[in-house]
Image: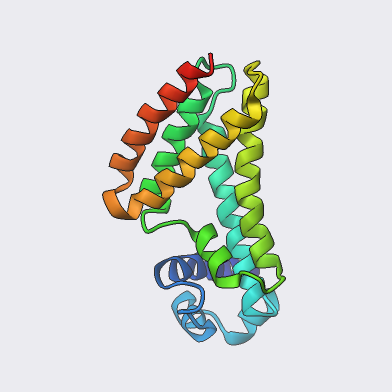
Length: 184
């Protein structure tokens, strides 16, 4: 295994374990064991557990945005609906137990660190994304639309552990259609 593939293995295992057991519930020894790498390999790539958590969140965010970008056609009649549908697929495939970014905000709140900044930045970027989408579609109240759509996705994410991604997405698509019609 090359250095970069060992790093990828570490990130993949760490993300899965952090997602399943929380950031506090997983030690570096468990990650090293399950990734099947030497202790020094971990420390060569990540000087601390916090550095590993930061990188896991950055990679997860990259995947989320490429997921959304590959699904949303800006020139479509309903890019908002496409975004809600893509978010729903993300929840079903990658985030069925709740939101890793919210968990990071909760676990690292008030500790003045990069982890909380990355997680909060992800939420801010979602708001910005919908604001830009509304501007591109010529909507005048783009901030209102952006806040409504962000609330809708956050609510869908929160409801997923309770009612499942498919049901939560079904409701959110219906709500998004109503919001889009009202904003016309």
